Image (cartoon, rainbow, N blue to C red; front, side, top):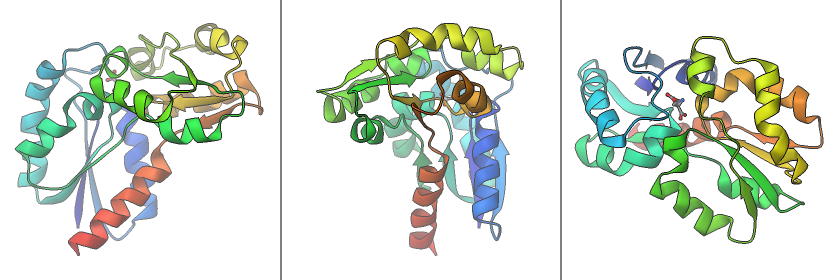
Length: 215
Ligand code: DGL
């Protein structure tokens, strides 16, 4: 089976690698949007216009399922995309629910793009799962663009997430797939008393369930 994997940029590459490793019998076609990355501060309808031809091309190339490896797209556009395309879309979104279940301090931090943090779906996730939890949203607004250029320094990351740690955060949600590439730096900054959640394995499990239904 051909599996399309889409992200604005290199965040999706790590997701595609994880899928290839977990499902070696399938063909993974990874595409990004190098012309318009980063998406993180863009308007959802503008993003929708960029994505439609890319998804259509993946379907024309024979993909039976598309993995939306971009929180910014999922939290703003997944319903519109599902109404537009008939193949199943397996999508990533910030892991607010597991973070809320894991935290002892009742303080979590969600690192995500401005467009994700402003989305109704993200507000809904907080309403559903984090009503009794303090959710801190560090200023990560430039992270994806800098990661794309390999220019985000450990000092900048530390500066952006330190306030959340000082407020008692014990779980950090990586709510943008680009942050896979700085997970190690974050881990070194926060130490081992803070849990870092990133979605690749959950996404792979969901993809396996969808593929089993298609087979
Ligand atoms: N990797 C994407 C996400 O998960 C988008 C980052 C961006 O393009 O700004 O949100």
